[in-house]
Length: 471
Image 1 (cartoon, rainbow, N blue to C red):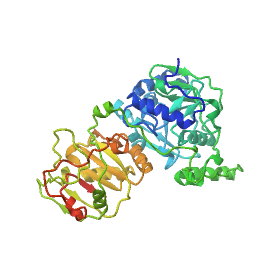
Image 2: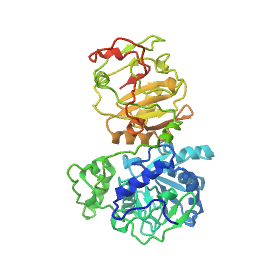
Image 3: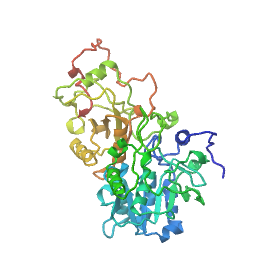
Image 4: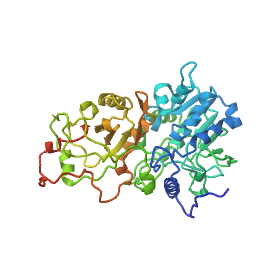
């Protein structure tokens, strides 16, 4: 079968990633979260592809299965639990360890197993697995951005799947015969040049798509350890478990000399990563967006200065709703005026200056009656507390400001499958962070004709807002 995406001669890994991400976005082939850039794409048909894992003989014969925590692999995790096999899921971004063993409740229902297969299950139904625990992984399931029929694989560029496999090899949990499966959309199967694949890159034995099961007859070796010279001290600081593993390997007499990050480059397994950028989604996709998210536009200079100044705590009476600063415009016909603090009444709280530039996450699907304090508690529990929370309860949404794109990405991963009061919430980058904004649009509602206000107006002139902002 000919690949639908043509890879040009001399293409780098990042060229291939960008082509695949752009193709999926341009053809609307992905589900939430969007956009897919800098992610393992949650492609349409992922659950269908995941069900094929149970058809593999190696799955039938396996006892312990490691499945990555990516959203499109949720169906594979569910299949493992339904088959009553041991499910091991890496800790997201390896922040607190390597593995979590998912332990569903006794006699769990199908719905309980579905929850256990989600990111919520990793938090609520898991037991950490130590590096020295006796683990033998029979099957590994990973996500990919691109993969070839020869078994060559490209991830999203952060090296976690490669590191996880190397760490498992150091533990003795995997060996050269351990089968690796990846699950992707058909368009993600491309021709990958062999010369761009490095010694630490993980290769795969099976590719599952919504329409195909591909046995790769992989002839390329898998990483059987950590390539310490590919890592930097900065990477070790971000992933504490690597420090422990490095100490163990050093005690065993292995060379654990670290590499040096290139000047002005982000540390990691890969180099040459371009600045994070997302391609604008097609206009028709934006118009059809049913997430209920509003466009967040550029603020004027005076607005930005006003928001950076510490504001006095101020509460407005019910019914106040002058045309103050809006976080985003509602859908046509929406009345954005809030009725009180619990619904997002006009209250501005500020305790410190925000950075000049923040990355904003949109949180939609907030159920009626949910208190802002309950949301804040959930964010703290998931270690996703923002610099500032903008509450618009009546519109069933909130905006979370983070210091930089990396902090926002970590929060997005932590908030996947967040459920409050029986309602699933939706977290994704605000549209202004995704290039979905059209130039020239204002972020403010039209106002009645009034005399112009000075740019030097005090901060409390912004008090007639329809939202609640907290830091």
